Image 1 (spheres, rainbow, N blue to C red):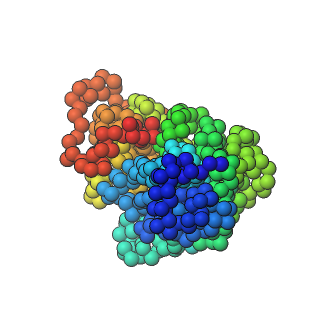
Image 2 (cartoon, one colour):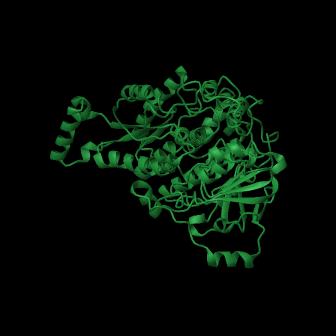
Image 3 (cartoon, rainbow, N blue to C red):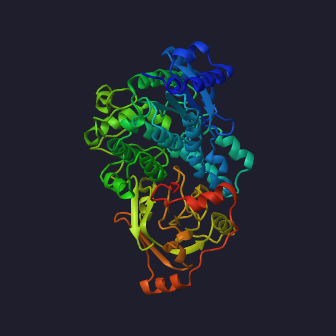
Length: 544
């Protein structure tokens, strides 16, 4: 193998080595060893990322043991939980692109790296790093911090929040109570976007088997990080790159796993974006073909009352994939250098209380659905597995709000009630801009019987109830959601995949002729540039 640094012109190679040596990289290593980038997203803001500093030390031990020289740098990493419910949430999805671009700038720009260990744990960080791995295509592996332990059941945590919203407990009560659920640094213990994307890294073959859900505070998490450092050196030796691992077949396996665990809807914007970086096309209809025939095998919150830690100790993602084996592409390669089929040959059956069989699933093929109708001609998304049976067929009266803040103010004034179809629009990728996650709204709506949220914004992976989002076209593009008026009737039938505005075509055409997009102050900086360049949710909210 010819190292990247040895491909440089002799003078530039000498200067590059001099700069690396001045930063503390061994001169002897610079002469002989592959140089491995450790792209870390550690910070003291995001709980899911706080353990990554220690885990990076373990990764570097593994690289050194296997004959490489690690060099670490950092990317940004926002916490969606802290940004939740205010305008800061608009930055979360755009910062996925910042992570990808910053990794490209550091790795490609410096031009001295032979492989990469990407370290990230949370919602947009893992997708951003996967996109970077696809774009740069150096031998790569993903490492996460893993979930924290929970000392209370998920339903108890939900009730705690509802009590706060009802004014029954104080701010301090909800903080102290929540610390029994989020017990310390690590990823949130539910099947939100963070744990979903970690699990999907396993399905893609970009993470060591079982690596996504090992609890953050355990020695096994440290051992896995160290093993990942050794694994990247084997990838470098064999020149096994992400493009050889993340194939069309691997993406289909990943969608199958997503459906089987009832994972986050946000995967339906992240995986199309990843496919685009790989030079592949992945459409929501591709998801629907798989999710419509894949049963849900686990009941992890918000689809049930178990945590992802429970799933780990029941056998984890490898055990779920073993149950899915008959419908998976088993010939795909993984970062182990082995095929998925070879790995699954060694996997034991999972605990049947947590991981069910295809013949005896938690529920039928209803984990994730794509809905169509005159309200969403290009599609809308719903996590059906988290929707109560009594609202899977729903007729409601529209109450229309042009922002999340407007909707929340109406809730505080008790203007939202049973039977309402709550429309929250102009929160799409362009209209937000940034496509806010409306977890605050789904939390309050869950406390109001027979009510729906319908939006061109996003949802948290932990959202439940009748939450229909990602509507395309979005309101800012003149989509039908922009034409809805207070009092309109909206019909939803999840069994038929329908979302319909019960207004005549003639009436809608008349409204369209009069429609004007709402005027907001022009965004400056990052969000202004993002609004001009972003594509639709259906296309992954990628930048043009």
